[in-house]
Length: 468
Image 1 (cartoon, helix red, strand yellow):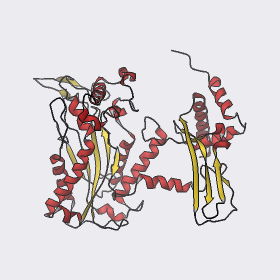
Image 2 (image 1 turned 60 degrees about the vertical axis):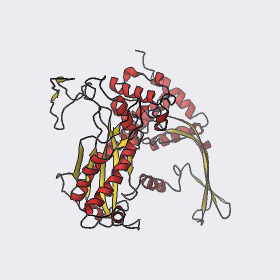
Image 3 (image 1 turned 180 degrees about the vertical axis):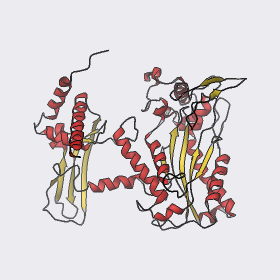
Image 4 (image 1 turned 135 degrees about the vertical axis):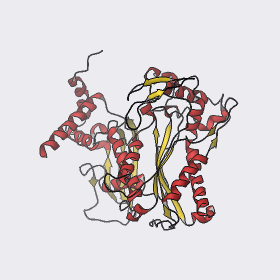
């Protein structure tokens, strides 16, 4: 194993680059490093922003990276994947938590507290079985005999948590890899049809036409996707019934007959009814549907430590907003050349799924699958849907939550020291025009910059700890 690079050899070139134009730029760079709040892969930008009075053409303010160290600006990457950037993904997780929680209890983010008494259920929709896989401990944490069968593939072992065999097929030659990949590629359509079927089943239970039901009741939801250890995705969702209104600022209760029992039964029946026909591959067509395990649990207004609470549901859903297929062992970036992927670092089962995506993504051999873009989504095992989605009227949006942070920083693009106001203090204009010119330089820090940023973060923790 090669000797680690001495710290001085790393810091020297980094400090030289930072202070090349001005030795005082080191203080500025440290200030920007702290503003990154631990982002591990910041974006490098160069450019400027100018604000002018639209009526008079007078320049009100100007910011340029010409005054920044190395003539560039470091911005947080805002990647949602915890494997790529723990700091930015935590921000994404927190936003998702508040988004989901606002739709459960209200009283925040523009949603009234009255939604807390609307019928709500927590739903888990799983993937079907594509072949027997090794099983780990149950939900209670106790191990169990894996597959004690007299005929066919069997396993009589007790697999403890962390056993690499968990999730691997008992017989990979009998595993339906084609069906697995095609199911992943159609889960978005399967979910869309499920939401339509759900409204139909609710209308039928109420004895109303679909049109009349939609005039009285609105179905709202928020969902996330989670990859199981076997490499199959399943969905967790909160589904809520509201009364219908055209006012975007109102969330009236549903009619008294649209209750929790009706919603629970309709979700279960719709999930077992919906299906999507796959394209024909190798002379076979799959009838793609949800798995047999459909879990529908009412969300009640329990006290602390009682039942399924709103906060617990929101935290559970938000946790999976920062995860993707990489937890199963796949690369966390798109695959541009399958030959460049080190399959020795990928579990055999996951590797076969990736190879299946790559093979089916050959447009010359499988033109009927070209629209699925399976090679583009090979690192996601064919799943090409969004990991976090919501209906329009469930609660607030991630965009609005991000806008709150942007508004907080309004008037000072990055900090007051970098922002140069030109208009007289207190001057107000009726309309401000913002002109920008930005270019992308790259992403990430050099080893020396990473070492320096770590030292800055360590000094910040020591300082904060000393004041407590």
